[in-house]
Amino acid sequence: MEYTKLGNSDVTVSRICMGCMGFGDSTKGQHSWILDPDASRAIIAYGFDHGITFYDTAIGYAGGTSEEYVGRALRSISPDRDAYQIATKFPPRTAEEIENDVNGRQHVLNNLDASLKHLDLDYVDLYICHMWDYHTDMAEVLEGMNEAVRSGKARAIGISNCYAYQLAKMNDLAERNGWAKFVSIQSHYNLIAREDERELARLCHEDNIAMTPYSALAAGRLSRLPGSASTKRLVEDQVAHSKYDATEAQDDVIVNRVAEVAAAHDTSMTAVSLAWLLTKVTAPVVGMTKPHHVDGAIDAVNLTLTDEQIAYLEEPYVPHKLVGVMAFNH
Image (cartoon, rainbow, N blue to C red; front, side, top):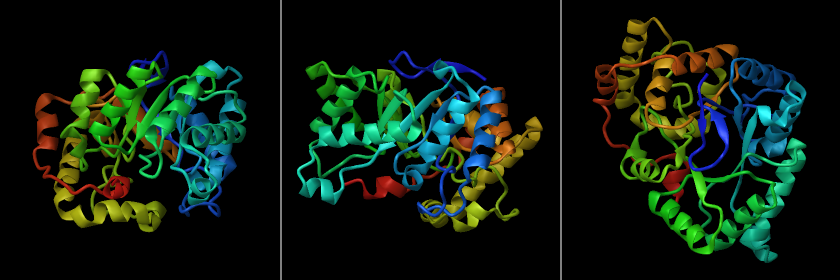
């Protein structure tokens, strides 16, 4: 495993982040395929034993039970809190909060306290605004996140699912007020979803903002050949279907090239897809529910693609419409 600083922060993370949306009580969220406490702990322990120290969850995953499972697992795996880094995320204000005049600052701090209770920890290493909140003064949100850092309950802050101009405006506001700035952006970025290359990637490169993209393997589509054996998630993950089904034909051209490059290196498609992403970003967030998911991600860190192979993988891409959260980001 390789390790690096998270943007301009003093937080050191593994170059692979284990995405923890796949852990939690399946009766409390929108995903039917997620793992129970024992199975979750087994995968988290397997990743930790292979050098993964960075774990990403959210208060919105399975009604907070993802946070509970992750916190419980990591506390039992290592008594050394410095041995692992946890990121979690908070959602926009609810209609009920708006009606009750809970402002953006209070919303952030209330959610953070709830997350820390779920995790049974004193602080998180990275606290992330899950998406832009168009019904809230984002200056209030940033003020709350700054207070989280000042109090020691968050070591650093980040944002997810926003446009480049929004990230730039928030960090400018933070600088003018002497507040903590966003050190990372978590967005939808992979070999078949490269719209972040228009502006966001350049901003992050110039300002040393860490990119920690989710859906790194396009919900498994970049890890297996089209038409190969199906999985429970591939069948039942409606969110992923809404992101990728419409562009399946053009994306399959790239997926088949991933398979060709994998064969040339005698490695997995997972390793190739993530090795490509590691040339672009700080630490991709990779969902893992089976040991071979961990193995493929570890292999990616040690795989070097040639310039020609990178160009071969990138060449068929055509512009896509924004999908998922960003399709509704207005």
